[in-house]
Length: 327
Image (cartoon, rainbow, N blue to C red; front, side, top):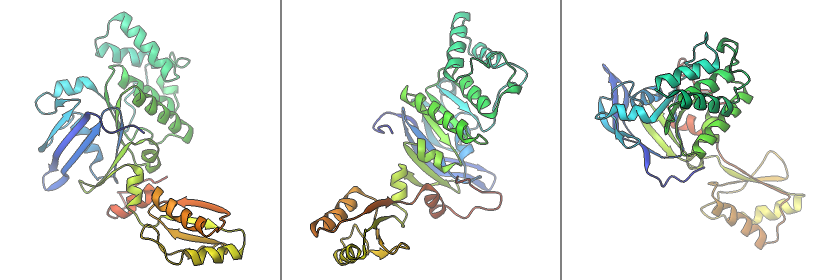
């Protein structure tokens, strides 16, 4: 993860958008530091794609102040477009062209000179492991290859802010992990990634900060760990070698401090569960109490709620057409 104490790549205040009586975005605020991954989560219809379309100048907001890469979205949309790249939910590649031809076409649209075009295309083919397939029609590419080519085309213009709208939808696990590594490499080079996804594990894996969007409003924001701590159910599981040690631990933990809840029996007859907020201080307190009474623990593990739990706890029930993929 990366430090968030940087100038903002994206700053939005009071962002609103409605279609008739249907309010899609109801005054959201966003702050995305440069050189980080910011993930916007929400069920279908929550407003994720609308947010991306506004921030990438595809549609106009009804209200709100927005700056992208230091440029005012309303007053200077051309400057915003010059610094961003967008990879949508569906690959925007030409199936009739080869991979190299798709990249050369994009280079021509960016008015690159012949030498720069040749160098840029060759570099991106190598970076995205597409050199061997460069001369083949895109219609022969796998889903993972198409997504890599799509992102490579976005990078032809060397954007500093990239909007990735559900970039790994439909990919197999290996292709998804390949795309994750590409995203990490981009951020290591200082690129800012604004990621929308329905795969909660993807946000957990990649994002420096996460905002949870529900019915057009940001209902929670923070690191993945921050969000998980907001949900009850975290606990420390202790397992003991024998009943004597279990009984000793039960006596020691009979009166627990505020950071720890009352110890309860686990389904394992030699294990206890101690409610915990997941903090290091809570773990240190627990270990200290047991150590002070020379109680030996055979196994210790920390369990915290995952983003699935966060999503279900903080958003409204999705309708049949408004599902979220949590795996």
